[in-house]
Length: 310
Image 1 (cartoon, rainbow, N blue to C red):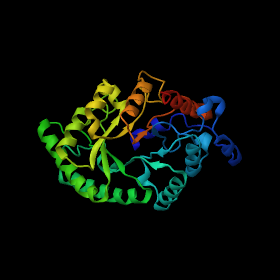
Image 2: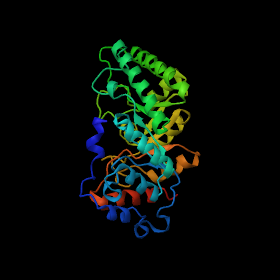
Image 3: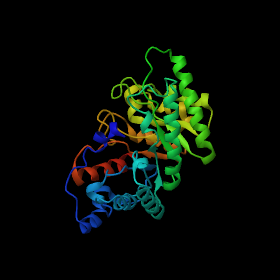
Image 4: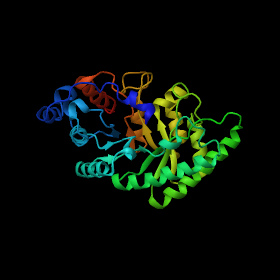
C-alpha cells in the first residue's frame, strides 16, 4: 500500500549479508533473548516482507525461513496481490513447508485512497471494487489466505452520515456475496484521523456497526491497535466491545508506529488480555523498526519476546 511503504521501510536500510552470513544470522540469538530464543510465541505475530532483510537476506523465502527459525508462525504482505503469479506460488510453497500462515493482503488498492469510494454510492466505485475482489479471490487461493484488508476510502463531503453508511453497507454486502462461497473474509480497517485525515472509517464502534448491518461471516473488523490508540484509546474495553466482530489485529506503538515498548501502549497487558480470551488468529506487525540494520531487527524480535512473556 502506497501510504505504508515509507513507514514499513523504515529501519530496513543496510548492506545485504552474504548467503553464508545470512544463514548464520538466521539462527536464533540465544544471547539476546535468553531461553526463549527460537521457541514459538504465545500469539501468532506476523512480520511483513523485508522487516528482517538484514538478518534474513534479500530473498523473500530466506526471510520466511528466518522468521520461522525465530519462532514466528505467520506473515502478512499488503502487496501480495501485486506480485507475479509465479512468485505467489513460490511463497505459498515456502509457507506450507515452514508452517507459516498467511495473514492479510490488501484487496482494494483501486478503491482505497484519494477517492470518495464506499461512502459515495457511485457506480464506478462499485464496479472497481467487484473487480478487485474477484482478483483477490484468486490470490487468496494461491497463497492459502483467509483474510484481506479492505479500506473504505474518503468521507463524502456534503452527504449526511446516514446516506454514507447506507452506501458503504451496500458495497460491503456485495463484497460478502463474492467472498462467502470461498470462505474468505475481508476485514475493514479504521484509520486514525491524525495520519489519514478525512477517511470515512476511523473508529472501532463505526466498524462494529457496519459489521452488524452487513451480518456476514465474510465482513469483519481489523482492529489496528496503533490506529485506535491514536483515534480513541480505551483499548482493552473497546477490544472487548468489538470482540465478536474482530477477525484480525495489527500492531504498532504510538507515537511513531514502531515495535512494542517504543511508545505509550502497554502491549504486554493487551497481549495478555487477548491471549486470555483464547485468541487463535493473527496479529500483524504492521510497523517500522525503531533502529536500522541488523541491530534494529534484533531489537524488534527482543521487544516481542518481552511483551509475549506473560
